Length: 68
Image (cartoon, rainbow, N blue to C red):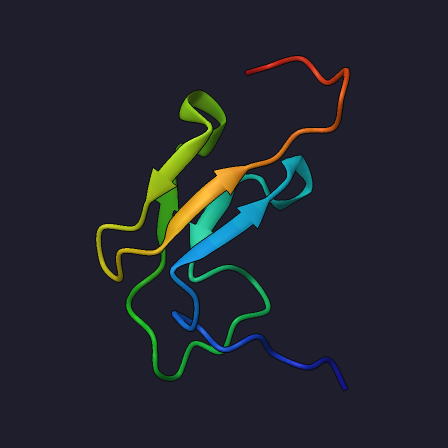
């Protein structure tokens, strides 16, 4: 059984290209106590804030990866 991550439990999340397209709540987060899913265009900016819960997502890229 896969363990779910609590939704909206953190104020900041680091994400990678593997998490794109990015949504809040992210896949794997429990959704029963969360807001509606919203997609965030983080590939364009490198940092996005969820308009519902205020969580900040930071895109972390491996050295040598091209910026979006």
